[in-house]
Image (cartoon, rainbow, N blue to C red; front, top):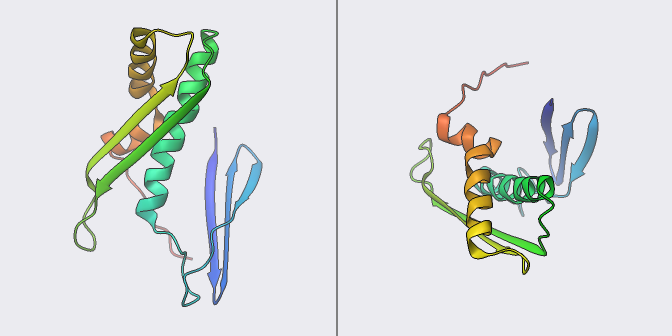
Length: 134
């Protein structure tokens, strides 16, 4: 799966495009009040990615087992210190509403997903990021 993201920002304009295997979508994120940069920060986007990945993967794995899930609520929190410091104390909480599943089935499903989620594993294991300046 090939994934990419691009931000093009200028005064009062913020265009964010994401793409997976040729399927491109635009994210609506306003520019900062002063007009330059995004109104949300990278930490917020990272935590949104963690929440999104967990949610999507729970639905995916439940679907493989024909488990019916009514809703999922994932919250993520953590701390960033001084400029340049990595995040710490990242915690995510998952609530699955699935009336036909037992608590044990839900816990087993979520634990399995926790071992599979790609964004979590990327953060947990660390990944080299190469800079290219055009």
